[in-house]
Length: 113
Length: 115
Image (cartoon, rainbow over all chains, first blue to last red; front, side):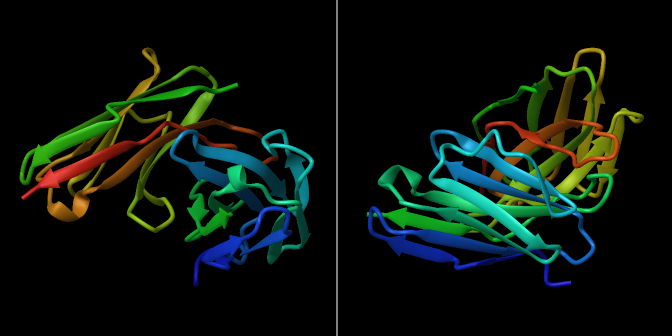
C-alpha cells in the first residue's frame, strides 16, 4: 500500500487566494482526519470523518475552512480566503475500523504571503 | 475532553545511552496509547502502541510502560543511535464504540542523540 497520499507537498499562495489540499487515505480505512501542525500549537485536530461523514469539526478555526469527503478514497481541505496565519503544515491521517494504527501522510506545507 | 502532557520538551543523550519520555493523561476512559516519531519534513510515524489491558510492551530497542492508576505512560529507548534523533509524540484516546478514535497528542519531545 502506498500509504496516505497528500498533495501538494508544498503550496505558496498570496493572502486572499483559495487553497485546496488533497488527501487519499489508505484503502480500507474508514476514518480520515485533518490535522494542522505549528510550532506554537503543535498538532491540532481540525476535523474528522467516519465512513465519509463529518463527525467533529469543532477544531476548524473559522468559516474560512471547509472539508469534504465525497467518497472513501478522497478528501479535500479548503481555505478561502487564505491568511498569513494559516501558514502551517497540514496533515491527513486515516485509520481502520476500531481506530488502531493511525497512519499519517507526509503533509502539505502551506505558506501564505 | 482528554488532555495529554508530555515531558521533557527536549532531551539530549549520548549515543548508546537510554532515553525516557513521559506522558500523563487526564481521561480515565482512555485505553489506547500510541507513540509517534516525526523526522524532519515527514509526517508522524507510529512506532509502538499499548492498550490498557497490558502494563508494558517491548519491540526491540523501544518499550512503553503504562500505569493506569497514576494515568501516565512512558517511552523507553535503549542503546540510542543517531537515527533515533527526531520529535516523539505520545497520544491517548478513549474507545469510541462504533465511531472513530480521536487521538489527543502531547506537545512533543525533541530527542537528540549525540555521537
